[in-house]
Image 1 (cartoon, rainbow, N blue to C red):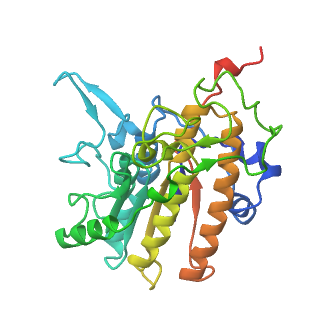
Image 2 (cartoon, one colour):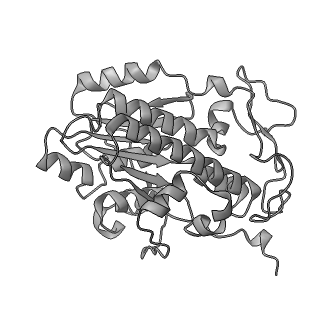
Amino acid sequence: MLLVVDQMRADYLSRFSSRLSGGLVRLEQEGMVFEEAYQDYANTETAPGHASLITGLPPSRHGIVGNQWYDRSSHETIYCIPPGEPLRYLDASTLGEWIKKESPASRVVAVSGKDRSAILMGGREADAVLWYDPEKGRFTTSDRLVRRARAAAEISGWLAGLDPVSKLSCAVWDRLDGPGDLPEAHPDDDPCEPENGRLFPHRLPCLGGLLPSKGPEHGSLAEEVGETPYFDEMILDLAENAIDRFALGADDAPDLLAVGLSATDLIGHRYGPDSQEMLDQIRRLDRRVGLFLRRLEEKVGAGRSVVVLTSDHGIVSCPESDPR
């Protein structure tokens, strides 16, 4: 089980430790922690990070050198996972492929809020690769990423029956402890944050295109849900569903479930790593991961899973927030 928290800084575990009591704390207490992690390549972005984690290689060897890059021969900007051939630029085998080679009965499933995260973690031998489509407000897949066309059609039908967004229409994201800033983060009116929608509570748009009077005004419900903790809840809900649907951990063949949790990255880009929003996101993530781990044990049995928690990259503090 690979949990990748997009843009999670290593210091969140220690900096917010007094506010955490769920899954992040459990993994820290029951596992081995590497607090000083360094990436020796330039573009510490989502795609290179996920590709390096799943291949064990740097971008110079696995080929995914950025989320996108300029190709001098074609004079075009290349997206790392082109729609027609999504794994065209991945020049290395993945953990899932190694598992499949040694154990054909094993299953490999990748789930994420981003297409590039799920596709690169799934590799070429996946049984299911699932990601969120912000234009449709649903999770999706591609028949180019699943070995059997019939399986792809079945997965698409299954996903079409799920509706993770509509229940969040007009939802409000407020702090866990109610009003008042917590000392582990900067004040809620930090200049790093956007002028529009800076302060708690944050109201999501309503279905039908109607925006609440005090909510953000730059997108739809399907898009803006990604900038809230609800996004990771949606991803983990789908991951739990996938454990059952694909019978992960149901036999002695080792399976791989790779989950890309994308909300921290989107919240970090909007509000910054030192914001009250980031603190609340990590606290909520801690609780939801704790619930996920308990449910994982209920499904596959205690002691029958190995869990790795990591991140693809971090983020620097906003210069606007520098007290100097």
